[in-house]
Length: 369
Image: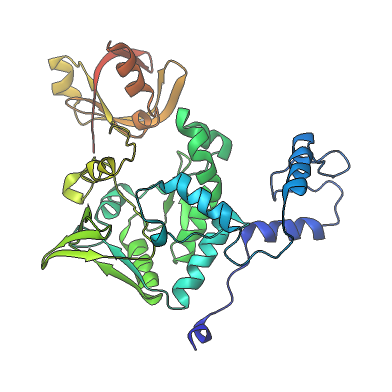
């Protein structure tokens, strides 16, 4: 039987913490489980707005029948229309309502893979994880050990949209994922988290081995070209054009920062043609053009700057950087986030950065990979 190969799934980390809190007899314990408001007595009061919504639901509901495993069909259909719109035929959309958010979906995906659901990953490059491997040349900075709230704020204006995703898969989850693949991690002096091996290849090999063990197929040299007139996915392969009609599709598309490694942004017009709103590509994790003097450039290009401070308006960062012939690059520069890009777009003026008392003008924004 298909389910004979299933093994017991690990306990949900959040539910395990809740259980540990309940079993802890200490009166001064702190609940690190679900983030809900509780009063001094430990009760979670029901807000007036919630009571009003429940009263309305009770007054308007027409049935007390149990929901099936797929959840509230009306809700699922309405959400599918909101998320996907009319770009895909309704009969090709499969939706499920889950009570536990992405944690439940992650566990469901693990079970589906173990029970034999066919999953295929298409990659335009000749081999998988090329950009991942390139990131490993710098030690493969996986995440940061700083307080989660501070980490989330680093996303600036995008924090509100990205925070639910960050909360669904936290830095701790990422570290646990790496460790689950046999790759221990450590926290560097900058607070950044790296695999102990300081390279990406062991992690990638373990990751691909796990997927293969779960029956996931990997198709390389298969470049996605959009959809045909009947809504099937179109891939350009070495054998020619190929169409695929999966029950469900997940698009995991890179930016436009490194075409040689597959991130060429060629997917943007494909989605725009289907009515999807695509924000223009902009530089991120990038160096700054700086007007070094010829003497300074000849003498110091290639020299590291250790533990420097950078500030631009309210944005500040501390770390290491590198003097380049064109300007300044490195972790401390990248940590300023989108502040330099936003300032240039807003004013078009040179940006002044103070680094340990030295003031220079950064006149532009250039990609530095």
